[in-house]
Amino acid sequence: MVKVAPSLLSADFARLGEEIRSVREGGADWLHVDVMDGRFVPNISLGLPVLSSIRKATDMFLDVHLMIVEPVLYARRFCEAGADMVTVHVEADTPENITAALRDIHAAGKKAGIVLKPATPAQAAEPWLREADMVLVMTVEPGFGGQKFMADMLPKIRTLRERIDAVHPGCLLEADGGADANTAPLLIEAGCDVLVAGSAVFKQADRGAVIRAIRGE
Ligand code: DX5
Ligand code: ZN
Image (cartoon, rainbow, N blue to C red):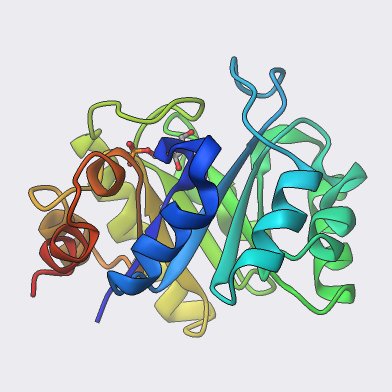
């Protein structure tokens, strides 16, 4: 069964505790937390103090998506602030520093993943496929919620599914951006294990209904 990870980016930040409880009660599997620095992406979202507060407010698995330059400088601190999984963009630094970031995350006892922007080909994941716990494929340009799903990312997802199955079957495959009840079947068919959904979940009052619809229940 595919996991659903609501993205807090579309939640009401003044009521984060209630928003988190609503998706937990609605059956969400993980919570996706988008961290933006205004440099890697043209937007600024939240950072370490907010993640620490989220950690105190919930026992949910926290999937922290770092959209920041030089993630190696902060990966360990996001682990200490309460992340269960930290993902870093392969475009955000040199290959050596991306490797160092993954090692820091693992040294902190947390899961580590890599993220590919839409223009980044599947082959860019190869150097880290064996050590990554997850590969995240962006199905919108990172930076904002509520954008249109890029169906042209589906072949890349299929390619990564094949490569993961060949070299590291335990590695998860996640998609982020534009997932809803209409696009989820395409992502599931292409081989995703985890679907991030922001606006689709938080714009609906009945979080359980939309989470079930995304899972295809
Ligand atoms: C975008 C973020 C996403 C975003 C997804 O940069 O990484 O997690 O919240 O939002 P939706 O589901 O609305 O496309
Ligand atoms: Zn995200």
